Image 1 (cartoon, rainbow, N blue to C red):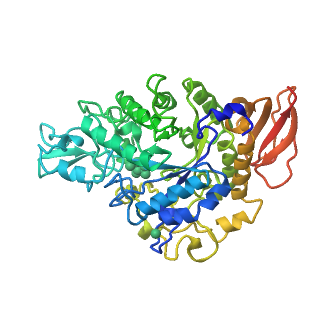
Image 2 (cartoon, rainbow, N blue to C red; image 1 turned 135 degrees about the vertical axis):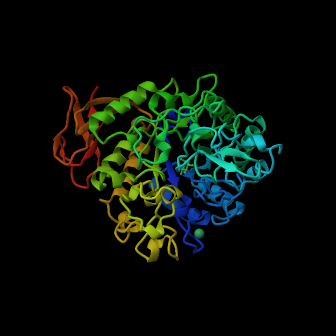
Image 3 (cartoon, helix red, strand yellow; image 1 turned 90 degrees about the horizontal axis):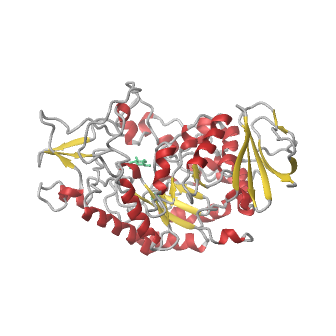
Amino acid sequence: MSDGTRLSRPWWEPGVIYQVYPRSFQDSDGDGIGDLAGIAARLDYLSDLGIDAIWLSPIFPSPMADFGYDVADYCGIAPIFGDMAAFDALLAQVHARGMKLLLDFVPNHTSDQHPWFVESRSSRDNPKRDWYIWRDPAPGGGPPNNWTSDMGGSSWEFDPATGQYYLHAFLREQPDLNWRNPALREAMMDVLRFWFDRGVDGFRIDVLWHCVKARDFPDNPPNPDYRPGMGEKLAVLQTHSTDQPEIHDVAHAMRALADGYGERVLVGELYLPTETLVRYYGSEDAPGCHLPFNFQLIETPWDARAIARLIEAYEAALPPGGWPNWVLSNHDRPRIAARLGEAQARIAAMLLLTLRGTPTLYQGDELGIGQVAIPPDRVRDPQDLRQPGLGLGRDAFRTPMPWDGTAHAGFSSAEPWLPLNPDWPDRNVARQAADPGSILELYRRLLALRRQRASLSVGDIAVIEADEDVLQYVRRHDGERLLVALNLSSKARRLLVPAGMQLGEVLASTLPSEHSRNILAPDEGVIIRIEGE
Ligand code: GLC
Ligand code: MG
């Protein structure tokens, strides 16, 4: 790296994270479900693409009620994915390619099959009783309060054996842990130590803002915007069940532990508005996550002015030293091309890879996978199965990677656990790798450019102008200035070049064709060098 200032930066600041959903990346043993050996076999694809770190969604032993987000053993590997030897081999191969590996830490809840919960529910005086959240029924009977589960229904499940309710923010098979209990806390810190000692480079922390609840469990206020059909999660506001002040002590304890291992990164899953989100960076004295996931692009309308305001508001809200990050989609949220179509998904790729901060890509978005209709008999997601008909299913965003034109798209020798994207014979890695105009090749070019030009990764950002269709900003580092201009419409638009700005070489366009310097073609985004001072 030629730029001296970059040497002192941790790898994740200029780096790009890529989320692998292990069930759907590559199957190696013919059971139709992706696995660790499959991922290992596809590492060249990821290093050629040009990413820096892989985040794996959960790979731990689990009954798979929520596809691994119901962990039955934090320090093991689910047999469908492989074993500890396969994990160690994968980690070594990732490191041998100069990449990093992040695991998914699920601290809010375990599986109801976890031995801790089996003990906890066995009697009221079991030493692990208080590792989970148990409450008596309300005075007149029924659940202790009105909290609702993200997966529908009450958050409380009655356990007849001991006559109390336990709390579950998600499925009843996912009892919530009690982070106010010091022994539980220490046991969870041991989980982090276990994986750090094995050499993992960091964690994505599942639903971090859920981990601590208000001490007295008051009712949540009703949600004034709730309408039947939205899913019961939204019946109340999660005022008392999430984002409590004490969560920041928990985040800091995790951070202090991670820092003891050197350059290890903590990425927090936090669906929160910007003002509350940025508190998860912590303070100088008590730092929290390195990267509290910024999901604002997922939640904001695709409108140039709205996105310009969002960039400015987010940048302004960052605490000193807080490094930004951006996300377009993940295994819980509709695919970007399903939302916007492929033409704008290309613009979205340029946006994500040219904003200031660490981007997280989600597998398959680089192929522009769009809508996938899941036939009723193939639905797997419990969020859909338990609240049918509300359109809450996530299977369509979790379909297997289409690698080539052979049977089952090269993903597996057997029928995959979820259907493929219907256009897989055309929309697959092999086809797109052979087509310089494909969205995959656009991603590869943008990732390479970002690696070459420090202005794109670590440079300053200034939003210079936006109307409803065109979003423009300048990235600047060490005397280099790059203009990013994105046409969010399907009409040709004039570049909004500020007076006195001299445009130089066009470094990239989202379109395969030649770019004309002053006009943005429909659905075109460009990166242009700015000449002079
Ligand atoms: C997170 C995961 C999601 C899971 C939930 C409960 O939001 O991303 O897939 O269902 O947590 O663990
Ligand atoms: Mg398999």
